[in-house]
Amino acid sequence: MSTQTDSNRADDNTVDTRAVEPSTSVNHGQSSHEEEHDSEGNSIAAWTAVVIMLVAFAVGTVAFMFNVPVVVWASLGLLIVGLIVGQILKRLGYGVGGHRYVPKAHN
Image 1 (tube, rainbow, N blue to C red):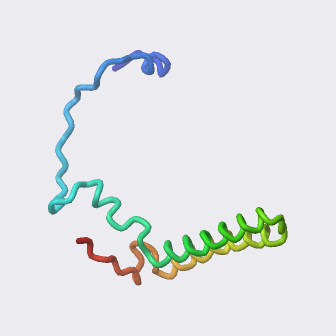
Image 2: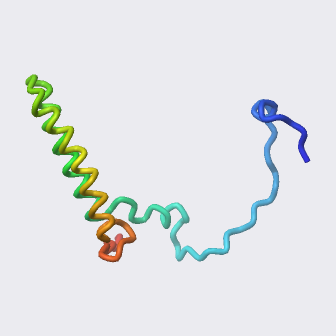
């Protein structure tokens, strides 16, 4: 049992040499990092939300440059709509792991 305080631990430069147990999962040639992030964000829900928000940001930027505040505020509204559309599509099953999601094969 250690008696060091949290502030003393930050100053301690020793290396933790405890043994790490090997993983029991089978990864079929992929690293665990690739398994976790294999299809992260690559779904209809994500891409639809990103495209809507990208258009909103681009329109808002141009409107800001030309000093058209109504369009700037409208683009902010469209940005929020993009977030909502992404969440709705995710709940309808078009997000990663959803029942309508079909992952693409990686070459």
